[in-house]
Length: 173
Image (tube, rainbow, N blue to C red):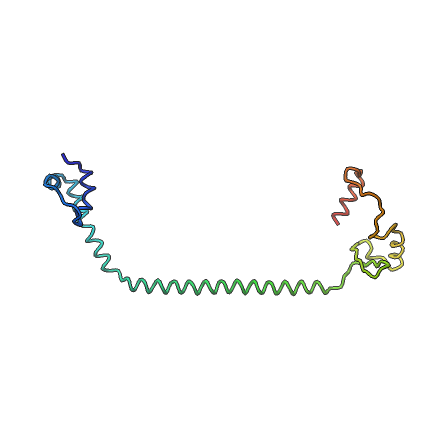
């Protein structure tokens, strides 16, 4: 007895002539309606593909593909040029703003030490003081800022609550 599944698997080989039916398989194809329907479908498939292949123009498809690739390349180039132009404009603008900030006069008071070096300390509390008052504050300082001799720096564990609070306020600005 012939297995229908095995016969259906052999059909794609017989259709192009790579294999042939045995007399027993031929009689089964005539007797079995399912196998006969499958065989008619396998025989019709190449004709369906041949009519579709006749309608396809490979030269026209290749030309259209080249045009599409060229359009995509031009669009990609313009997008890249737009990004680069935008980045260059942003860089130029940031340089102008940065240079403008460099040239603004400083609104913070300047403390001048005995040496010729200038040292700026931005203290908002000193802005409203006149020259005499600033000099008295400078004299009240125990030692110049650059000198050591203040003793060892305490660790945070050595500070009490009020001292820690003052440190935190000074860090907040």
